[in-house]
Image (cartoon, one colour):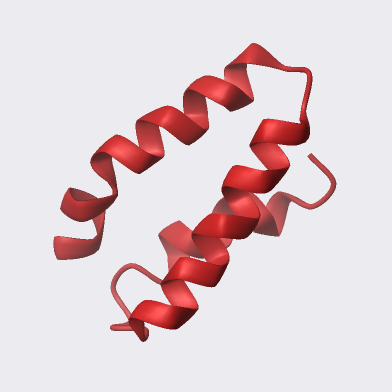
Length: 59
C-alpha cells in the first residue's frame, strides 16, 4: 500500500459525520489500493472493512 493514510482515513472520519460522497471516495481509494496489492492480508482487510463499515460508521 502506497500510503498508510489510505488505510486510516476512512476509519478516522467515521465519527466526524462526513458526507456520503466523501466516505465513498475514501473507501473507493482504500479498496482500490487493496485490490492492486499482491498481499492477501490487504484483500481480507478490504472485505472485512466493507462488511463492517455500516457498523463502524454508526458508532
